Length: 488
Image (cartoon, rainbow, N blue to C red):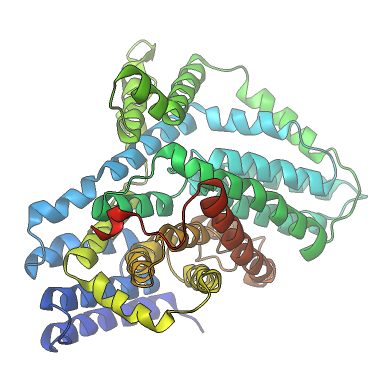
């Protein structure tokens, strides 16, 4: 029988043994000793991430301990990775999201959006998917799933109590739809999921190539817009054939919830205004800088929004966001992203990335579109067993070096693969939303795998094709033209 503790223990010692071997075995002639040790540390971190030998966030601290120890970086250089501007952007987004959750604004938004849903099982699922995806663009996909789960279970209970309805018509596809749409919604914005921030940080830190909030939105949002209805169609018409019977289960649930939450509080209104102001500044940042001779950036906007919440009073001795509320944000994710940035920096500085890229000559002449599909497939199925952020932390620098080695614009590999890391739908361990839904006790691994394997395959081709078309034809990026910034 599968035993997580035994796997973790094996992973703990296997990672340490491999690192020791790298320390005592001489590196290849064309790779520096620092690059060889970096490779050993990268393998150690990958094994610990996959096996969860220690909490995945703790593994993110390994670079700050081992890189100075082996004279790869001094402590000042490597610690800066954990305070990277995009890590701080994520911090600002987390604080705004935590304020939304604390005052109940996210629940009110969910209820209002769900009010437009239909009454058939398929339309109820569509309402939940749209709502979850929209919230997940701004709030963590885990929090989005946790928030939507009790609403869904209430709908299921009422649905199953109606004599003409069968609970099985709705339960499994609805719960899976919530998990999947939380992951899909996170694709749309730079702060929607840590993988997006991870790639942007790697490009910024190692290549001085900056992807802004609106830049990512122009690529991520169209993919979300296409992938969401495709997943809905397959869930409700192909994988699960839902009945056409109408039900008032959702309306009954929403009516009860509206009575519970009452009218909008002053705190909700203030948080909503700050949230909208922050989102608007992210979208208009370049216009503002170009027309008002300013130099604001996405990080300063995110932290400005968070700071406003700590300043604006909502009642006597109470602000829109308190430190007690902010302290509940997932701080571990920031360590994980920082560790990934540090690892990527070491790949680049020590020459390990270039050494790996030297093997890309074996792929000269291969069809580039086929190579993108292969890598997207690899990333999706690796993410089934590993944290998607950890997967991108490990493979993004390799993908960038590989693409430069075959004279291809790195964005054509890095962006589709990063998006693909949010499309692992088969197993509970693949993403936090999958784990939350599996933890409800209403979904079996068999149910999730049955739906997930089909949606994984669909995502492979959809993400690859749409990303390729967006980059090549809508953003005028040349696939065989490497931006000078990547090779200087």
